[in-house]
Image (cartoon, helix red, strand yellow):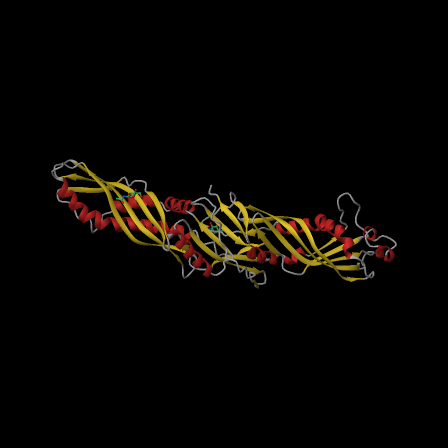
Length: 454
Ligand SMILES: *[C@@H]1O[C@H](CO)[C@@H](O)[C@H](O)[C@H]1NC(C)=O
Ligand SMILES: *[C@@H]1O[C@H](CO)[C@@H](O)[C@H](O)[C@H]1NC(C)=O
């Protein structure tokens, strides 16, 4: 019952969120790796040890004990858990040995094991607009205290020592360690909103759509990508209407990046002009170069106008933004435009237009990742419509050309499209993500990259 209520509530909440063009779902695998590597990179252990060894004003001497030293700070063990609606609860378990000389001349040793806990609240930094963690409520919990002092001295001296020293001094000593680790994690978001080039034609940057949210099993960062043409004009994402939601069938703790079809459409709009081409002297398969004679095989009118064969020139212009569609397990690229067939003439003379066709065809898209770029490879799927716009050779039945045009597109045009797509689309650059191991799947209106951490 509670679960149903919870699901219903979640549904309401997600329903009211603005449509993001992309999202990041960060599981515990990623957060653990980030915090662990931040611990390593920040050399926090060495810093803690150095701090601990310093003389501190609050550290009262213990009566009868001299030469107090802190040594052997243990390698901290970090445990993280998600706090829904807040962020991440962090527990750092560590230990240290405190040594000194007792008044009887013996060596004193106190071994303390402690937990430092804090809640790392997840926010959106006002200045940079990037996700940022801020620690709150840092506490020191003593897990165990062991000493080699004679047992009759134990309760009094040790309790006094704990009261005056550990409880007062340790938070100031240990809590900055939590903050220092967060500084490292926070820094790793820095590149997310930096514009990344798409060839020479424009840039993409990933901007937060809202404050990131935390659930019991992941952090979600909704992104509104900004796709900008080289001149500076922004390409609006087509209004997708559908919510972007990562399917729930991924392993607990795993992380995903999801890109909407609308966003990929906007990115390909940057490349629209590059899809316009003029194809000349093109051999298809083992056939000789195409001439007006080839066309005459389908349209007798061509033979009447050109009794002597002339080489063919084909001009393709894409006159609507390319559109990406996605369903579970399949993705298509729709192209709308014109195909003009021209007969070449001798040098320095412009070719003559035979006819102009309006076409709509779609391509099958296969996605892959190379470095931090999403690559697409296409093949012709279907010629969806073909209609005659103009003709200098009189009216004819353009449907007779279906097979010929299909062949021509597949053999001559698709290689051009694939060449243009080689540029790759930049993936979100955050937390030093390496996408090479990612598993790619298309779902309804989106592409999901299931991240595999190396
Ligand atoms: C200290 O932290 C460890 C690891 O998270 C945990 O298992 C243990 O229960 C904690 N001890 C106390 C006293 O909080
Ligand atoms: C940001 O990008 C620059 C240039 O590619 C790179 O050198 C740097 O390491 C990146 N920073 C982070 C935090 O990923």
